[in-house]
Length: 347
Image (cartoon, rainbow, N blue to C red; front, side, top):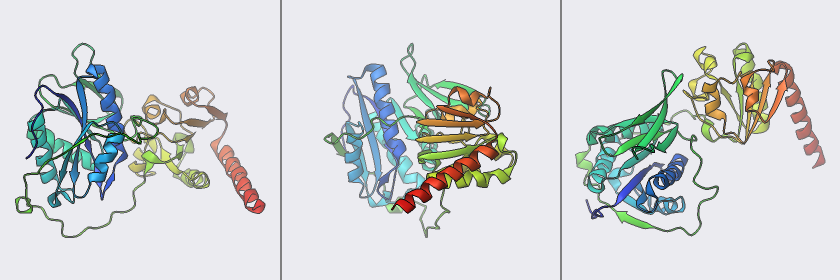
């Protein structure tokens, strides 16, 4: 491993997740969070840095500067070309042992969850998983990581008092991007680091890749049409789908619909589901319990449809329609279709 530690330097690290040369957006969200944490500690004395593993991924390092990293530890080698837990966990763990960051943040993606637990085990430190909020405890000056617990009915704030680094995985889309657009002229230091492993050291081989079924990208959908108990049954889901198709969006649901087996968990929004920030969120037949609101409350515009004028969802909605969703949504579909047909005739 190359590189020399900087004596006395204090660091917050973000692991940049990438696949086939494309960075996962949660990495940029975490860089913004790291900068806020650094400011709360002592912005001038805390370095916000990134760790990047892969092969042929140097352009991503340049992007990391544009989102707020001052240095990128670049571990670029053929042995890291595809994700495997062992070489990635060993590589990051050795880096941590050398440079001793105070905090290490990783996206709570499928890959991030797999990797973070292995790193924490190797380093014998604590890991707070699936966080929805990060802050600095004002008295202790350490990371306060908040996550849902007891099935989403309570929120727990967890401190790692004795061990370092303080580690947390954070769900995509629960944190804002560090800036609307990345800085065009940002720069920083790229520090190449050798992985210290060869292919002969890795007992796992990828023999072939079986393509997965296309997964719903709910977190980054610009428009979401969501249904709740007010649907009354799974037969109402196609109605939501027709409205979503017209708006260029996707269908989501509250937890009871997943628990009832009406739809897969990929569609769930809320504390125990996905956190979303669409431009438009239509909540149809959703009462608006706090467990659901925390997953969609940061949408740019919320339209609520509910027969109960006292439903909590109306408290956060930008526009509310008191009525039967089986009357309101067909009318919305009719008017949208008429607008689309009219635009087609105009051309």
